[in-house]
Amino acid sequence: MDDTEFIAKLREKLAETDTVEGSQDRVLIDCRQLEEWFAGTYGREIDPEEIGLTSVDLAEFRTWLLKRCQAGTVQRKFASIRAMLKLLDPVLLTSVRMPKLPPSPKPAPSGWTRKERLAILRAVAKLDVRDRALCTLLIWTGCRVSSAANLKLSNVKLGARSGSVTFDVMKGGRESRTVTIPANAELREALAEWIEKRPPVKHDFLFTADRYPFAPISRWCCHSIWHRSLKKHITSKELAEKLKGPHQARHALGRLLLEQGVPLPDVAAILGHASVATTANIYCRPSEEDLRGHLERAIGEEPEE
Image (cartoon, rainbow, N blue to C red; front, side, top):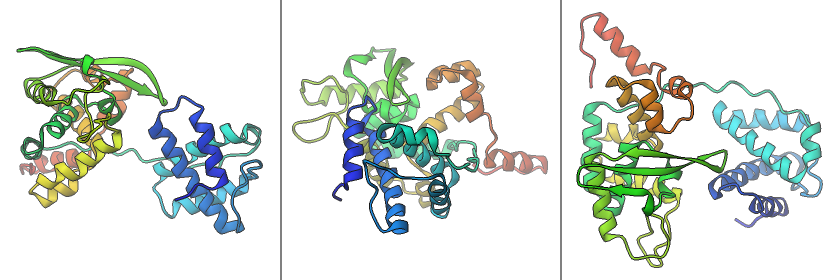
């Protein structure tokens, strides 16, 4: 799809910032949707030199989005619009009134049962050496996809009986701090096997593309490995449907640790949360499965795994 003048100008301005590439792409995608609505309403493209959006326009765009997206997605898209106005028309940003957005429901993150986790690990074992190392890393460290894609070889320390992985934690599109996570035996084995077969390249990124010139993989490649390569080896149709994106591995690990009685501050440290309150707000909410299990136990039935 060719860029309109509006999108081309926005892309140019975004490139001048230090926002990570994935966040830039998301702003562009969301603003293309704004332009789609604008063209359908006014029969013309948005002028990058004079955006011309009004408070009424934004309210109508919100209504248009709510017919197509969930409330949380609408909130994210309006964050992209704010970012666009800040770059292209900061005066308009201060004068226009953003519409009131509906609260985004916060369901408890979904975990995996023991049976599901074992099935996923069996599927991971069937992947090629790079993909197996990546998926094992996601499952046993709970790292974010961007952290996995940006992991440096020099930040992986492996020994016979211990090891660790140090991630750069990204916050607000900028590198802010590092988090070091111990590597269990399964992760050490998978990483060691990949490092041994990793192509000799000049860059320090751990994971490389599978073809010359073996560039660092992107987070979109991580998603592709999870959705295509891993799901291909999931034999249960029900589990394949339940298996969402790779970020679900982070949620599953957080819930597993809490279910095993790991103290909340330790879970926060493993997940790289700056505040224990963040961990509590996300992982201490009961899920639908939790509530159903409590009710089944109350009447003397064992909940299904």
